[in-house]
Amino acid sequence: MNFKNKLDELFEKRKKILEMGGPAKIERQHARGRLTARERIDRLLDQGSFMEIGMFNHSDMPGMEEKTPADSKVGGFGKIDEREVVILANDFTVMAATSSRIAGRKEGELKVLAARRGHPVIYLGEAGGARIPDIMGSKGLSSFGGGYFESYLQIMSRVRQTPMITGIMGECYGMPTWMACLSDFVVQVKGSAMGVSGPRVLSLALGETVTDEELGGWKVHAEITGNVDYVVENETECFEVIRRYLSYMPSHNNESPPEAGVPEGSGEDMGRVLDFLPEKRNRAYDMQQIIECIVDKASLFSIKSDFGKSVLTVLSRIGGKVAGIVANQPMFNAGAMDTDGIDKVISFLCLCDSFNIPILFFHDTPGFMVGKEAEQKRVAARVMNYMNALALLTVPRISVIVRKSYGMAFWNMCGSGCGADFLVAWPSAEMSFVDPAIAANVVYGGKASAVDQNSEEWKGLFKQMIEDASPYGAAGMHNIHDVIDPKETRDYIIRALEVAWNKRSNGIGEHRLANWPTKF
Image (tube, rainbow, N blue to C red; front, side, top):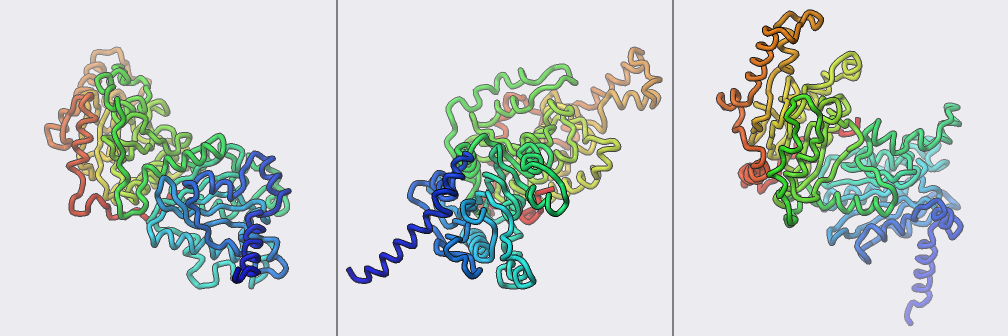
């Protein structure tokens, strides 16, 4: 056969590269209950669809060529449910997947190509930070930016043009953390960790002793930082969640989200939707049960469910079309948003506006969390950031006042004058500056200790305040569009979204929030 020696050399080199860090390191990876980078790619992508880029890459440090197959990063193109994606996976069996010049060039090029060609990006992280000694010295540090005067910006910044997803699969320090903080969606496997620097570096540099879990485990990022959107038990579930998330997203910002068939039984619970709303006005309930009645069967996909719990941010489908949902959750703080909840909503608004997803708002809030702690967490600035993001939205918005909607939170939940295409209320709605009970106390005398709530005067004031909070006053002034029967809500929203669809742009928004930072 012609060129037999050359072909034999090619096959031998490929074989060695596919062995990654070698059998011992692969076995060590499996012993920790983790797949290798190549196994992860095979499990996530459609079978046989992976097209690798940079297989023959290796470190440019003298003597490291044979020790760094693919230079510790496996990347290329593939398909998920027949949709083209770009995928990057850290190979922990090679130099702990530490970042280097060559790997950085590969990652940067694939990221740029994904944006240019309209492919979602998936980054599967498990890495030990920057590689030393590669990055040491002035030449090492300055060359790490990709070799051009704007190349590092291309790698380490982002204007949302295609969806970007990061999976935190093991210990992720340095580059995987930066990529997670650039991503639209981050899913973390329990037992993994994410941070700027790992425990070993902290111990040497600061004398600080901390475990991976304490530093950046799932509880830290799902409940405290909000840098993780979804937590899973294992890698198999991680791949399932990534696939499901992608099913709600367009491939790029110039197309609409994918539609789906309407599952049988969708909307069948609308007749009993009020069973989930207590008649007693100050009793807590689970807003998610109401939303589940309204949207398509089994279509809810919660984002950041363990962070800022007094507000829900959810992807869903209604009538087969994707819609984002922002809903107050009275089960926590009576639905009053704290600064974590505000940041959570802003992040979600950016996602929806960047990828042409209409947004549904469901109100039941007594206002924002206020007080000394809230002020120290800059609640006023956060509220105004939220309002500014709301003003920049260019996707359809439907706002439904379920029960309470008081004070500034009324406007932040897309109340009157805040760009709602349709703003409606249920008969159970209350709209006012503050809770009627508080208002009655203020009018009565301003001091809670001086208020006799059993007096006829106070009861009269309170009754008047409740009546004034009825949505019919706002409807009469055309400050809301309608008061609707709760059981008609699903049909109303489906029709309203049809009307709000922008035929001139074919449903594509202006993406004014595409470069708004969403990690806090």
